[in-house]
Amino acid sequence: AQRAGWQPPVSLTAVLLPAAQTRPAYRSLDPSTLVLDDLPDATGVLLVPDADRSRLLRQLTERTAVVGPTRPWTRASASYARAAHARSLSPDIRDTEDHLPELVLSADADAFADLRARALAPLRTVPVATARRLEETLREWLLHQGRRDEVAAALFVHPQTVRYRMAQLRELFPDLASPQRVLELTLAVGLRVD
Image (cartoon, rainbow, N blue to C red; front, side):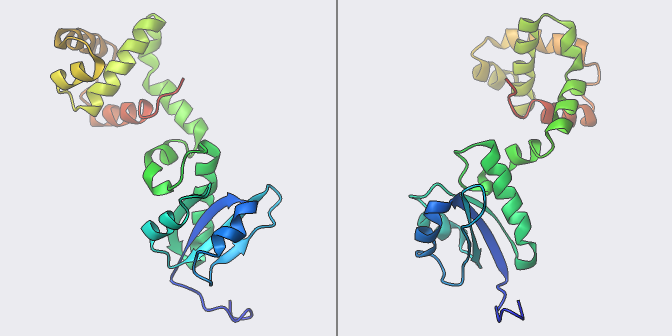
């Protein structure tokens, strides 16, 4: 920064977009934005200094952009890494801050798969169709904190059906009231894996 005569900002926000959109997008941003548009994968990167996030997102409305988190300028690579990870997950992600649960749960795909396999292992002892219904019920039960009527409404079933399925789940997961078990199950069913 000293050799280039560049006055570092407090923060930088990485924006990834197709290389062809980089220069046009740059023209609407702070002139001290750093531009990288010669990357080998046809991706352009804008490092926007001290960005007002909502304004930045509005300025990029017509672009195919992914906006990473705002980080101190010395940690701009973390903003870039999150935006790149989000882009690899889905072309529909624009603001990484709106997709934090998905990003966290997909950060280490192997660890997530292992956690899911271990946490949901008891469901492998029942027929596949039953396991799917029980997992769906478990997801809603965790989401609605055990409120049976809300779980039933979310699943479009009778509350008695929820009671029956929860009895099955309690047999399969005897420690279902354990905070550690609840945490593991919440993470395991947090994303639908098809």
